[in-house]
Image (spheres, rainbow, N blue to C red):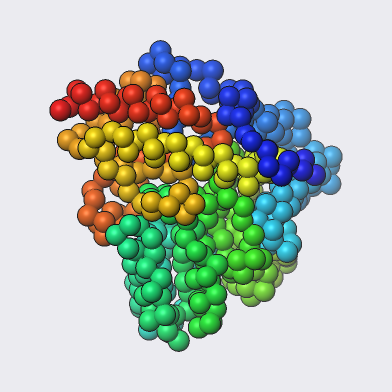
Length: 416
Ligand SMILES: Cc1ncc(COP(=O)(O)O)c(C=O)c1O
């Protein structure tokens, strides 16, 4: 059972950093300042320990054997599903399917639901703000199933243009895919509202929560979504593990995604019946260590309290926006109102290419991202090719913001 978080606990990043061994290293002889959290987060020692503990003490395959090690591994792996279920408030842990990442979770829906349920002429509505993960699988189905793909646009400020929604949702709309929070602009979208509208036309809803899940509390029952995709590595967990929440009735009715061992109940030369949820969707030996590590990450985050994580990041965001906007020639993208955005800040510094900005920051030990952030249609819509992006998490402090601002001023001096 995860420790109950203190309702309004102020997180102290200086204390939390001690839980993360990576912060003992330097980069170019400078202390590491990690501001690339939207790409992947760092891992606390408890997560690293959970993984090594599995390999050192009870390494065995799950589900198959009666021996002690296999039993212990199976219990820990199943327990990790239960932690993930509590994390998003699913009705049952059987609604949690472990995948490699959010990308695979969305592909699972595209292949195991879309391929069998979409017909030529049906419509899939996504937003122009999607990460490629929640776009390319539907483009694949457009080719295979001759469906139509329609797009909800954004405003110039980088919010979804909800006024357009009623005319885009038609009786042909069979699936609506929405990014919960933008990895480029930080925008937190009103997904509950959109899901309600989508339900009116009977569409299935898929929420890409890869960016939202690490930073804001998620409740799939309150959202009333059908599917929700999460990546473990963006929320302190290991790489190679994520999960799909799926509404039980839908998962029960769906065909499997991958086929082979573990996902079956009985097999004859003529026929096959499938295993119970969620194993029906977890073919082959799963990422056992990753699942257990993700469970540890979820416990760590749950003990901090996602409300407290969000509050910490809001304070940091406000501070960072204020400081950054004082730099002449620095343009920031996304909503002005900080409550509607995560601490993900995309920006451009006049006269300096984002890759050069990132290079100079690296010299100062500061890790940020530059590029199109796997959201090319959004970038095109907003008239941008590349941006620099600083993204914050629990272990970042105002000192990190100050270091970022100083390094940006250095970059400006060098290039102008
Ligand atoms: C909004 C969003 N969706 C999906 C993904 C894909 O995540 P993964 O690469 O872990 O599958 C990302 C990764 O950056 C993302 O930001």
